[in-house]
Length: 152
Image 1 (cartoon, rainbow, N blue to C red):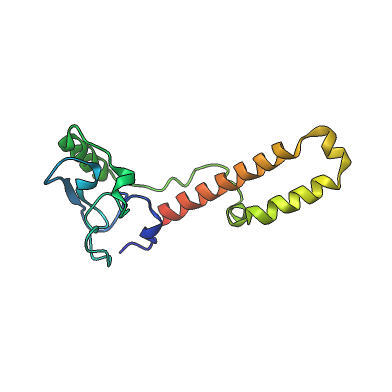
Image 2: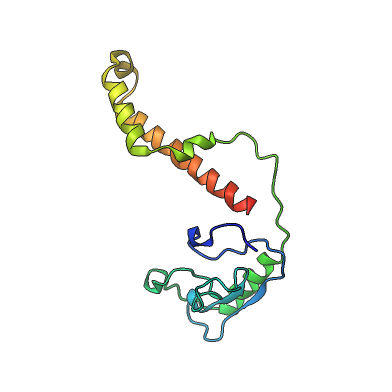
């Protein structure tokens, strides 16, 4: 039973589950969308795509041709046979609250503070501060997503 909202995933990753995953195979090996198997292959309410690697219904955006689909299946089968383990010694992470920041509101507040502080204008440009804010928020969101995925 996966306790992670799989609709948030762009592809169906080989998440560590309780049961052994299905081997990846391809009956009509042409594209990445033709590969089937792995985890998350139980009843999900999406009967058409429940065994496919791609979770998107818009295959035109992911029309990746495969020269050797058997090689791709072998790689996926090897990867999913590896034991996953959470690394508790990950070091310093971004503050998780930063992942929930409303970027529009934060940039408006930053613009206001910048406009009212003459001293900061001599040291740094607003565009640089805004770029750093966006970069840190995105970094925090990525870390939050990874930690949520690992916890699942």
